Every structure is written in C-alpha cells, then in structure tokens.
Length: 360
Image (cartoon, rainbow, N blue to C red; front, side):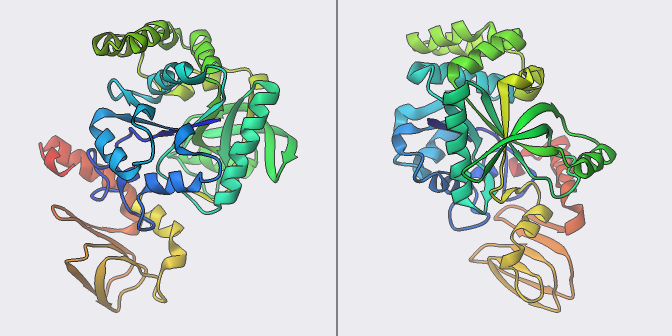
C-alpha cells in the first residue's frame, strides 16, 4: 500500500504558532519533532521512502524536503493551487494512478497527535487487507469523547468483524459538523464516530467514484492525467481550476452506498490539536504539580493550570494567574483564558480585516 500524507493545509487555530505560511504540521507542538515528522516516524514498519508520498502546495515543498530528506523528490504531489479537499484528493488519485492505479493507497492528515503508534499501524494494515479482499473503501472513525462541533461524524451500523484488535463496522452514512445539541445526541447515541479524515482505496476506485458522484470534479480527471503525462503546467492549472471546490465528504463520501464502505474504529489515542485548550488537555500528563504545561523559558509565582509556549531566548514570568494560555513568538503574543481558545479565530478575522496579514 502507498501512503499519501496530506500536508498542504494552512490553519490558524493555533495562532500565533500556526500560520498560513507556517501551519501546525510544520510546528513542534508536542515533541522536538514537527507534526509531519512525527507522522512519518509513526509509520515506521509500514511505510518506507519508496511507498511514502507527500501531497502539498509549492510554497511548502522546500520545508517538507528539509524535514523529510529521505523521501524522493519525485514522490511530491504538488497541488496546482490550494482548493478544497474534493479537488485535492481527486488530483492525488489521478497522480497516484500513474504509480499504480489498482494499488491501495491511504490518504492521511499530517498534523494529528497519536498516542498508540502500534495500533495506528495495525489499523492501516487491516484496512489494506479489506481493500484487497473486498474492494471496499476504508474510512477511519475515532471514538468521540465530547460533543465536538468542529468535526464531522460517521454513523456506523453493526460490527462486522474484529481483526488483529481492530473493530470493523458497517458504514451507515456521515454527518457534517453539527450544532451543539446534535453533537450531544451523537455522543449519547453511541453509533457515531468522529470523522478523522483518513480514506483508503485504490486510485482507480477513487476516480470512478468522482465520476459517478461528483462529475463537476470527475469529468476533469482525464485532462489532469493528460497534463501530468505531458508535463504541461498550464494545462494542469487550467483543468484543476475547473474542478468544483467542495469537500470530499460532500462530493463523494456521503453519496456512496454503504456496501462500498467499511469503517474502522481508530482506537489509537487520536487527538486533533485543534485549539490551545484541546492541546493543553491532550498533553495534560506533561503538566507540573500545579497543572502548568510549559514549553519554553518560564518562571511563575502562584500560577496554576496555565499553558505557556515561549522562546528559549526570552523569559516569561507570571504571578497569580490561573487557566491562561500564553503563546509568545518573535512578532506576536497571545494571552487568553483557556475556555476562550476557540475564539483565536476572531483575532485572525480581526487582523485580516485590518490588513495585518503579515502576522498571519
């Protein structure tokens, strides 16, 4: 199986450490390695440089090459422009069809935190086996721990089998990001999993699904493949720009027949470090006796339950504070109560509206 790591996204939910030009997959948030490097390391034993591919955008390619020097340069899938996941994954399928149209591949995010790497690898191995045995598409759902309104959900039916500790379920559809009330209902129901953005199938099957369910994307795949074969950048950009910008979930997954899909439950300690509060919760075992999680140079008095991300050359001090997030970078400083961490997006919107994009 080929492993395609998707790292073309640019997010600001962890601003100011994560920016449009330096997103969180290139940040050192949990260990001394970047999230991208952690992802590659986690796949050791399944993936090698020979079956690892990187999907990204041109501005990020030099950063990826510096971080992953062992991945061959001809394994970089450079998206013609930044668009939604529907066109992006269709482009990957077209590109990978030239490597092996009928060889299973998995598309995976580059910026997830995983606690159980062994179960992570087992899950992908089981997914590969199911594709080869039954020709089904594989998605991976993650056990929800709270009513999250920032993620989509996968509805599962009966458990079909357990293989090597991995639970395989019938797929009964997906729901996009719900409101708080609906998210609570999903959590209480027990038959919903978070959609982690992991998809596995063959390039040929992916392309056929786009042609069936999303012709506004799929009809342009022959032109994409032709342009790739000719090495024509202009033709590639032109064909890609014609693809409708929508998510793969809306374009394809929600329209698929349940018999074509299997959902694996990802019991591998997954966390999407989506905001500073969530990151603090996930790294709670690294906190000191006062509940402070410190990354950088810090000293404090009467300080509790506070997250500090600083710089080695600058000392941060606090007195009499509780439950804060303090993130210091060379050109920006964020201070917020943990419970307001999701409102970082409002700061990003404010800076954008005031023309201060140099800080984003």
